[in-house]
Length: 562
Image 1: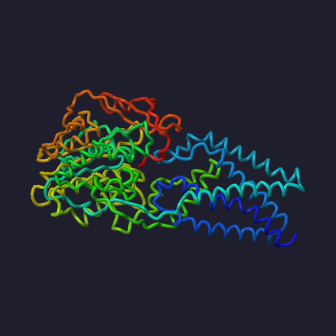
Image 2 (image 1 turned 90 degrees about the vertical axis):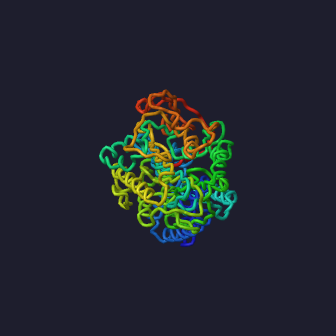
Image 3 (image 1 turned 135 degrees about the vertical axis):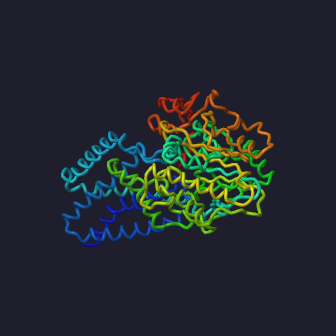
């Protein structure tokens, strides 16, 4: 057999793994998440195509020059691995991700992984036995199967390329300008720490009583309900006042909630009173509130932006996600990609510096730039979304950022340092800015499970001076957010906005709901939310059984956010 014929045979064997791992895999991942990714097709496809063709041609050439027996063994191994990878993705992948973006609970899937591995071993042994049974025919069988599957994959890849039109960046984000600025008149300043729950922060306050001293003008509500226990839909619900509609797809609700009458009326009221309404969050705020391009007349610091893509990280993570699809469960944990890593692929924008989302980054900016007054404004409504207790924990106890990572308790202490410094600087500004300000320090949600469900909640209404911080167990909720803001800015009709936190007193009976994505409860394969109802305090909720009431939603939403 001449070298050209050997090379052609090796080309056929090499084609399927190259197609799966180098071309079709990344394409399928992109096409399935195109609305979620910031990057576009051209940012990765040509690189993957070029590398794939190079590996295909060079790898086949190397195989062609190997001794015949070695080459035949490698052909069999490549065939078995390629076919099993194809079958794994087509039939054996039962669950690959959590809807909330959290890491998979691999311990609970040991049984699945064991069965999956046994299937791989049995199938691999069966395919490896073919050359011994049909010594003279196995080559044709293998080549025929490989060529057929490869042809199907090529057609699929071409269809995906045609269907996934390579458009330019159509991205909006939020401007960092003004994150450390307040208005000379009335300010409503809302700190939303991500996933900061009250039981943990109470431990921090007990260890550091000086926190209560800095926050002496605040009231601490230790029985605050977040309604939704993930960043999305929690922040969208808080700002719009619109409950999730389980009768429509989540993606549709993500857009429509901002245009409901209640949401429009709330922001129109603020704008009519000369409040600038700004949201400061991590750049890919689609996760937080939905498509920003629809919010130009609602959120005032939206801007057009073009991301700077970290191409190396993009290609590495896409390839890891591709391998993750095709390999057996026993090795999948090694290739699992965290949701926040995908967001880091395009974390900087050419329009201006990004908002400080990490606790430590915000603290550094606060110490270096200091709070200032923007004299061009009348009043300002600011929502400052910071990383809080969201993993990975990377805030030192002194408020600074840690590259190496820290712990839950250190991060909680660092959060306290951040809020204390902000309050100190707010008090130091000239005039009555601190006295006139409403400051709410809370979290978008508590922890991500039923054992730590409630967020922190501190509030200082305007013109409030106290000898010490007040503590109450009044049954408040994030449902009360809009009415609370309108009450604090004074003289506003809160009809249609529900109750404010001031309408509730300790000892009041109130039935509240706590919504958890069904995938994190139940069997992990359900759509929608489990809804827990409780009438008293957080301890009743923490003692609830993980059964709840399932509210199914239409299955078109794949990521509940951070």
